Image (cartoon, rainbow, N blue to C red; front, side, top):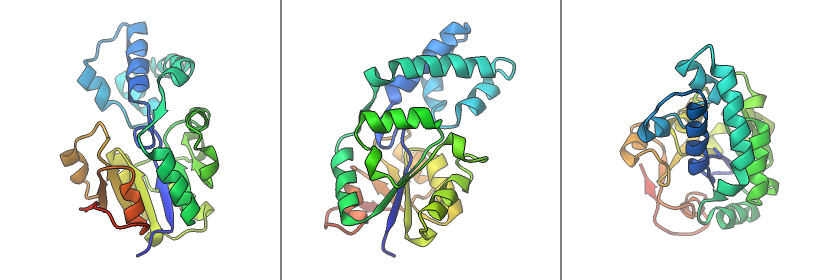
Amino acid sequence: MNIRTILFDLDGTLINTNELIRASFEHTFDTFDMHFTPEEIKNLNGPPLQETFYDINPELSEQMVSVYREFNMGEHDRYVEAFPDVYETINKLYDKGITLGIVSTKIKKTVMMGLELTGLTDFFSVIITYDDVVHKKPDPEPVEKAIRLLDATPETTLMVGDNFHDIVSGQRAGTQTAAVSWSEKTEDFLKNYHPTYYLDTMQDLLTVAGERHAENREV
C-alpha cells in the first residue's frame, strides 16, 4: 500500500547524537563515581533517561537525569549534525507531498534543539516527544498519537528508526516499519524485530515512498 505518512525517530535516525550521548553518559557516571564500559554505555542508548537511570540507581536517578541533561544541552551544538543525505531526502519527501512527523523519547526542548540546528524543523507537521505521552516507545501510544493528529491511517504510515523501540512501537500501532543501517545496533539485531524495510541509505526512503527506482532491501 502506498506510503502517505512517514514518522521518524530523531536521535540515531535523522541526527547523529551518538558521540553526544556517549559523552553525556560518561560525564554523568564520572560525576557519581560509577564505571561502565563503552559497550555498556552504547547499550543504554534508546530508552527514556528516567527509565535508564532508575534501573541503575533508583535513589539517584533524578539527580543523574539532571546532570546528564545539563551536560547534554551545554555541549549539544558542538557534537550534533544530520546524517548524510538527511536534509536532501526529507526535502524531497516533503515536496512530494508525504506528510512527515517526529516520534522521539527525548524531551521537547532537546528535540527542538536538534531540529533547529540541522534546519529540519519546518518539514514536520507533528512532533511527539517524551512530554506528550504517558507510555513511551515501544508502546504504540506515541505512534498512534502522531497518526491521530495527522489524520493519517496506520496502513499508509511508515515508522523509521534505529532501535527496536521504534520498530515495535510502529508494529503495535499497525504501521509499516523501517530500520536504518547507520544505527549503532547491528543489522542482525534489528532484523530480529522484522521491520518491513531495512534502509542502506537515507535515499532509499525515496524508493520506498515510490519516488524513484533504486535498490532498497525489503525484509
